[in-house]
Length: 446
Image 1 (cartoon, rainbow, N blue to C red):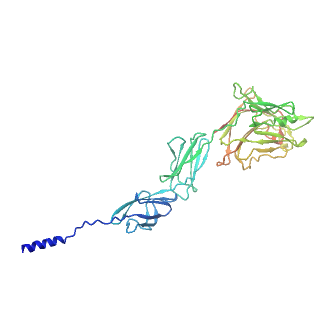
Image 2: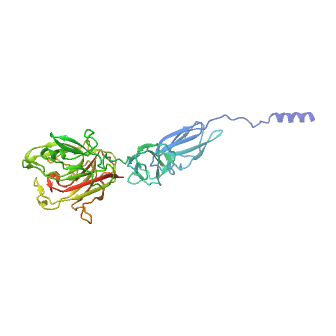
Image 3: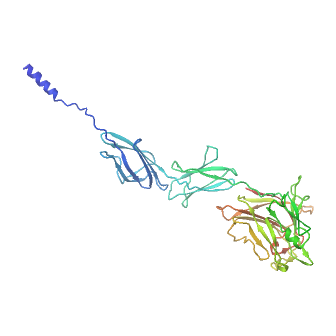
């Protein structure tokens, strides 16, 4: 019996099954993943991550799962097509086969790099289309060669755009700007601020002369007559029939004294030859006198108005002194009501995007339409009929500041026109003989 019992125990032991069989290694992969507003998806089996890019208009906390699949023999109980996912933070899910695989899903917003930059000298306006997004965003900018970024406050889109004006920028400096939504940044966009540009010889210290019409001397506010015309006057037109220039340098009566300091002196006159003449206002302008046109009662002048200029100042400042006389000429009969009234000086500034200097023709009545010309970007003027005299009755300089009113903030000029004249209506051959205007030390303010 003992032998039988031992045999039975051995047989029973031989029937025991050991539960340590190794299960096959079956991968558990996410093979497809699509949520609403999705622009792109990167599924990495190696890192077990799903990175989805969604449009700026998407709300990361509420994204509907449109499509989802896993590899063969795998399942995922954490996700269901049609449910709403919160991907504002990484989402962990389990894909199961015989093993358990942990996947991480995260989303970022695709931020447009279409940053429009309207850069002035000391500030810039950044604009990005919101493309339907209501998410707040921020702009960041830095100077070239620096690593620290300046940051705007959070900006809520309005009228389909994110807009921010960055102040305190350095003129004539290279910068980079980028835009971020929900922690995702766009590419960097390079821009340069405008220089605080000035027109050459705005202090009117440099003058030169040349001989015209045989033996007559014409003056120009330039260091050299052959250096090209930045500033000019109607002197050559006046000398065509007269003997004296209407616009000349002034070395004694200046706004700022010092070695080599000069000013511009403009006096309205009636140049004539054998009793035939035409009223001429003393003037000074950026541009060039091109020549006389017409004859007799239709005698006039051609002038190109404007010199190249691409910055956008806020004002023109400087000094002027004025001694007006009573208007005694209305040679074209355009302003008969002004005869006998006091003359008026004018300092005019226009920034425009004409493709070339504007050609004025007084004989044909071709002038800039200062109210309606669509090329005018900014406009300003100073006018006065008052004599600038001190308590002692002597002529004196007064300081002026001429603000520029911008008619378009998103366009840059190609030319600047500065025109100073002793008689405002000189283009119409109306004014007072003897009206006298001095100007000195012009400067653009930014």
